[in-house]
Length: 85
Image 1: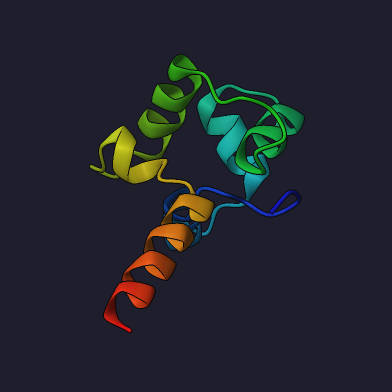
Image 2: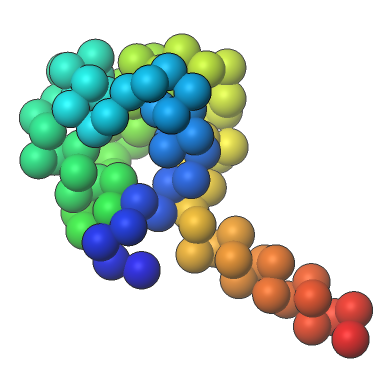
């Protein structure tokens, strides 16, 4: 999973605004390299950073919704599929 954004909703919100990581970094007041590392799961995302990103996106999503990890979502979907079979 390393190398990809693990926070799908953040990417969706960025896409809806026509933003890339550089624009998000600028709006959030964080460095580009910090944003890239955090969104790819290469560095821990701290609560204050998450709140800063949430404020910059101004999307109305809770922190839990915005920062649900792709790998956890995928695991939950796989579990549901196996329970049906």
